[in-house]
Image (tube, rainbow, N blue to C red; front, top):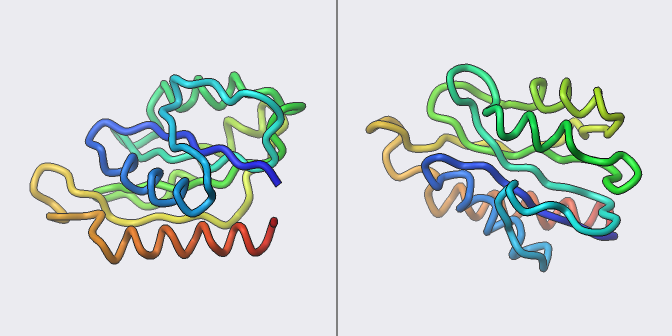
Length: 139
């Protein structure tokens, strides 16, 4: 099973989760400005809500993916107020024929004084556990 971890962040919160997840999977967490090279069975995609939707950069990244190269996407991210970006990411991925699995990881992120210190060590520990479970399930 091959994995790739890509993320988009404006505050650094999602990058911290991406690094924890990637470390567990034995890959490098890279920003979405870095293309996914080669065939990848599972792309773990980190992102968050910005102005009540996913960032245009995330939308463009997902819509530019090749269904023959990416087997499936697993969504993860942080947010100060909103919850999961799953539905938004899935809607874009559907347009290019890449399934987004129902499983995902999400935690609070610090933004303008809200959720101070998040993601914290417990959040990062949970993200690592999430990645271990992905590896157990998919190999």
